[in-house]
Amino acid sequence: MTVWEKLRPYGMVAPSIVIFSMFFIYPIFYMIYLSFYDWNFISPTKTFVGLQNFKDLLLDEDFRKVLSNTTVYTLLTVTLTTVLSLLLALWLNRKGFFHAFVQGAIFSPHIISLVSISLLWSWLMDPEYGLLNWVIGLFGFDKLQWLSHPGTALVSLVIVAVWKGLGYNTLVFIAGLQSIPSDIFEAAALDQSKPWTTFRRIILPMLSPTIFFLVIINMIGSFQVFETIAIMTQGGPVNSTNTLVYYIYENGFRFFKIGYASAAGVILLAIVGALTIIYFRLLSSRVHYR
Image 1 (spheres, rainbow, N blue to C red):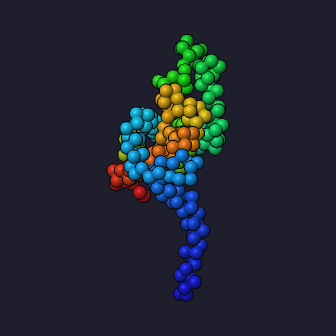
Image 2: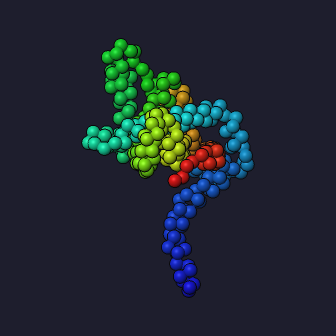
């Protein structure tokens, strides 16, 4: 084998590696570098402050509130999306025009931009003229301040996220269900297995790779939520919907505290990385790969 033949595979992947390094690897290391400096994004000089940005973050009550909001938002979004999409997949995993139509209908929000969805739900949740308050008013309930009350604003954003992600997760679950060999279900039927037993002993273990994948993807996506908050609540009311990415954006591009925002970005990177590693360590052994 000539030298060219040995180097050709590396040459073919080199452009992708260069682009990946420029737009993913380099920004991460540059963010870590900036987290040790005080810089206003305009001045040509940076002041080295060491770990002061991280110390200020951990002592900041607003930052602790942001971490709490992000955790609650992620737990609710990932749990509800996974459970509801699995139930929908079990119902829609059959042939027929009606089920195919419902699959397409619930998948359609996934291909719509988050900006459009945020604007739509802002109107639906309008306290005076929104469709949701009109519907609950028909049943005699009082109007809700969906996005303007601290007790309901974060839950409202969770509803939007679940509605947006439900279709994609459902179709992935349906694909996982259809990959399970039919002879397994036939054997269960011959053994007169009850539906709950079949679900717990056959479907869940066989779907574990799909569940594992979707939980990881949904968790990372929930930690990175930005568009819905920027359009619908801007982190309010009284900081009740502010999450990590929007907090980083505010400090970096509104208050020009680049070092402070970079430190928050490093913490976000560490949290997502740690949670992913923990999830892999704890649950990967339970995943059943066929």
